[in-house]
Amino acid sequence: MAVRTLHCSTNIENYNICLDNQVAGFGHRGALPDDTIYLLVKKDRKTLCGARFELDSVTDERPWEDADRYVLCYSIKNIEFCNFFDLEFLGDVGGHYWTLKYLQGAKAIDEVAAKRLDEEFNKHKCAERQYLKIEMKKSAKDSNEDTDDESVIDDSEIEEIIREVPEAEIKIMGTFQTVNFQNETDKFKGLETLVNKNFFNLFPNYRPDRTILIAKNRLFRTHQSDEISGISSIPDALLISFDTKKKLQISLIEYECYGDGKTRSSEKSKYLNSHIIPQLMQFASSFSIITDKSIRDKTKKDWIEKIIDYTSADKELSDRIDSWVKEMKPDISTRAIISHFEKELLEAFESNIHIFLVIDELSYEQKETIKNIITSFKVENGNSAVFDASVVKLVQKISFVDKDFEYALTAQ
Image (tube, rainbow, N blue to C red):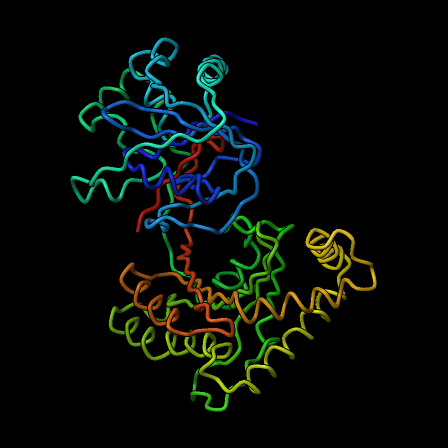
């Protein structure tokens, strides 16, 4: 368990959202469950602390406007509050460049600084949360601040700091070249093949013990009265997640890959518009109120039966479901677990549907366009279908320096 600071820069709104929703977002990986986090915000050129907490479980909840910037999010627990105090005292233990040493990138801080932080927090500890006045942002830059503060120090100081503080230098583990996947399903260089094998390493927000990945790309067929020629009605995988609110989430995963077969921009654009988007729309519409209820019900019934059959045949998955249901209803009898799980699955299909695109290339503009299309589909309870997307790149080693270093360079 490490001690870290999480800096919202000048964005008081993001600071408040973190505490309001009990969720912490990180722009870099590294934080782990049970780490102690001091939540910081900058006001009037002072770096202030008003709360601390421990990280709980990984979550995909991202309530901030700049949600795409957070690569890892945790629910939080054991929240404590204090009257806001300035962290300038850390200069006594961290030197002139204490901001870089202790505030950048939510890095773990050393024992001496952690002790000083604890002493100062306890000195200012209070029973109720304190608030800062939110002022109008002066520039677009302010509205895009990351929770992991990247602007604690002036850019002009960076070069000098790296010279004087060697531990601040980014150390490269090796150099790598971005290469194309062969296609989606190639045994060795297929996007779908490699992502399925490395799913939980690629997407740490999905914990193996809180998720069931059914990577059988012919198992779940949607029922459509007007299927589009050439557009598959079968997602490549199904993901069932048990979230921190003790509810199930259903994600229909679609793997798409331009790979070696589509290298021109015109080819990619045509494929996106004529194949990928219509296919994602078909998935979303299958559980949307625009589709006849009897057809929707048939799809849900078939899929739930297949999920039960698949998980019942695997003891590890059966045990996982047992633990989920007992977490939902601690006093439930063993005989009632499956029926309750079926009930929760049905509720998820009617309220918590995600369409998850994993692809080797997707621009921000394209992602926003697809998101707007998918969210136009309303499911049974009135919620919108949710669009998730991740771009996965295949990189090949050029040279390797040190496996203990954190960063790598890719050439594209």
